[in-house]
Length: 294
Ligand code: MG
Image (cartoon, helix red, strand yellow):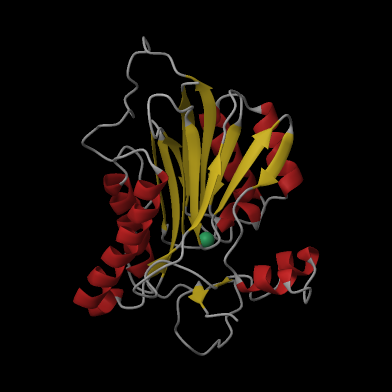
């Protein structure tokens, strides 16, 4: 079966922060969301490097190409951070969904990769299911039975990551290989969405907005209405039947320009206060932190 993506995306700085450190990309066959962390310009630079590097590296429509691209993004972030003291310590989450076509005879597959706590959900037959597993402290504590999922949702340290790009020379990448069905809808998002909007409400909005661009925008609106305490990014990808006669859309690869990038720079926003409770409030650390759990 041949399929392709019909996608829409939205991003917003939110109600509190002054800089949008999320980045995203979506074009035919590839969707990416990255949520940067780090003071000064670090977070926005890291997420943009991640998106740009993966987008360029993913050229073989294979899972190997996809995971290698995430590894390259990690290497690139570390390299850039070492060149510029202002970028030292920057990092980012990344999640991506891509069409895999490993050969003419094989049915096409969907590859999903994840590092950090941005999420990929699938919305199918009216049901929302989270595919990725967060690499966060609270997720680890839930798995150990030390926190309930309800406690995790409001935990003051839910912003602490256990895995991110930019932290170590090598990074472990979660991979998911799925058989897609026409009509499946995938949602990629940063935590600014699911920390403000319940999964029940996300499900409702995905189910009542057939246009993926409208659905993506409505989700961002809802997160802003819920407080917008973080940057919010949503990419909604519908799996549709491949139409060889379809006119290329402006966002089809290969294009020369990145069609959608989430970062909007604002001057003087380096040290904006965070509503997240940091472990050490007196330390001028980034809002998102990485911690080698376990
Ligand atoms: Mg975030």
